[in-house]
Image (cartoon, rainbow, N blue to C red; front, top):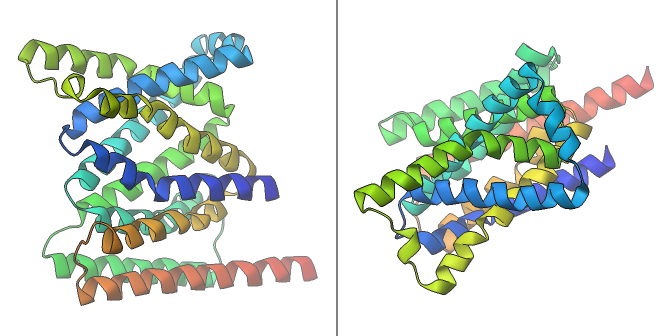
Length: 292
């Protein structure tokens, strides 16, 4: 559990500061950035698995239809999450990305109840209700459905569930996931080249090298997350996640100078209240379990 907690904290700190990295490529369309992210992640993970001499595990996965289907699902989910996140950051919606990852822990609780048969107590259900009220308030203030926030929370929540159920080694699992979406990324490269719409390859050398590093930037937090997911309950893992969106929110206000309305601040306050209520309910439940 302690090892899982350390891995989770490292992963969420890395994800929290990630908007600073994607802002380097404001002139590159989100889909093209995603394609490079997939390709260079695959390359980096391929080198790592080769160093670890884990190709036998890859062959085992290739021979298992159920594992391939599960990893295909998780690969598509994380690719969708990446695309939404990159687009949102580069279109000045960092506040909404922060909200999405604040909501994700509460969504994890619901997913754990439905799919893993975990049983939240009354306090934890109260936390979910408070978070639901926050989303409703924010949606009314926006005048539209907060699709960026909800989509990020849903795709990453389902990805965490998939990782929990698959239970694969972090390195082999991530290589398999990137391999699933690699043909799509390479196909998109071919399409861009044929249409004369390639942007990334015309970047200055220093910026392109930074884009090449997207494989490392992508893979490292996912490796830490996968190790955490294997050692912690889905509900607890989700609630450590507040570290990431808190960093994102601070960046959006103090670095990217995005505006935050009073109603949005109320919504965030309710989300924080939900987090505190959930944490208090979880600690109380743990103490009662030990006492009995």
